[in-house]
Image (tube, rainbow, N blue to C red; front, side):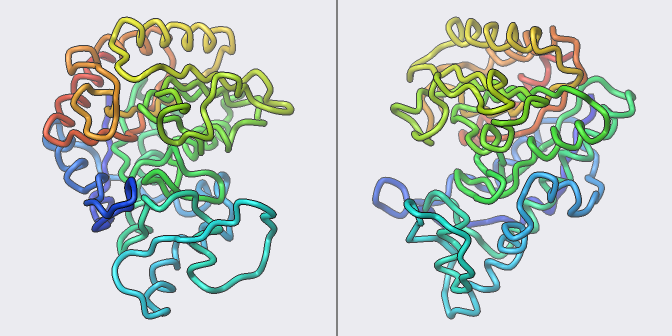
Amino acid sequence: MIGVFAREQLAHRPAREMHNGAWIKHAETAARAEAIVAALPPLAPARDFGLGPILRVHAAEYVDFLRDAFALWQAAGREGDALPYVWPVVGRRPLKLSRIDALLGRFSFDAATPIAPGTWEAAYWGTQTALTALAPLLDGSVRTSFALCRPPGHHAGSDYFGGYCYLNSAAIAARAARDAGHARVAVVDIDYHHGNGTQDIFGADPSVFYASIHADPATDYPFYWGHADEAGEGAGAGTTLNLPLPRGTGITPYLAALDTALAALKTYDPSLLVVSFGADTFAGDPISGFALATADYPAVAARIASLSLPTLVVMEGGYATAELGDNVAAFLSGFA
């Protein structure tokens, strides 16, 4: 296995987020990535593949906005990090708006995801990290690789950010694998929270199967996506599988859900797998509610490895920073 990390990803350092009606310290900190780096063997630096693979997934006007948003915020005379406060929930249409407040609402879905001075740089290099880790899978030189992406990406859709996510590294890697000749690619999302952005990007695409095991959105973020009856649409009907689980879920029911997801993948028969891995399924995670232990993660990974597919592991969530490095190392050990 190889691992990849770009230190440019540490540039994203928002100060705070809005949570349950109050300002709190931002949970997605640079210390998360630093803890993972400290727990793993040396990771390779990322190469720069440019904007092309990003634009295969994200709308050009959204990418332009994300790149310029903080500068526009400052030009408007604002202090601190950029955050939206108004959203076009009804009657959305492609208006030509220039005020930063309008653009923030147009391209986002929550108030917990600030845009700070280094956000674009970090998100951009997160995608390059995933693409660098994908490259040796495409040429067959390795079977498993790990992309330490930060900030995470699976909540980001083609033209929106939210859930601490700005660019969807897992989706960008999956699309790049398709472009490289893999006829069918699968994404297995095992973050505590549903990857609404990835589902949205591939919901009508029969060439990418999306399976997610996550907290029931009836009680947990992101609430509006990830319900069991969401199975894809149009040509992609049947290539989305959502397996929501209740708070307090431990390893036995979790592995049962994973076996269901992997059985569906075997039927789909992909030639490459992307794993959106969130260590926020850990029992001690401060913003989540499952009950997995560090010792459980190798068994989860071993189940996935049993598919014997070229596999890219993309880092998503996990906010118990003190234990995060051990949890990631334990998960990756299951692919040995």
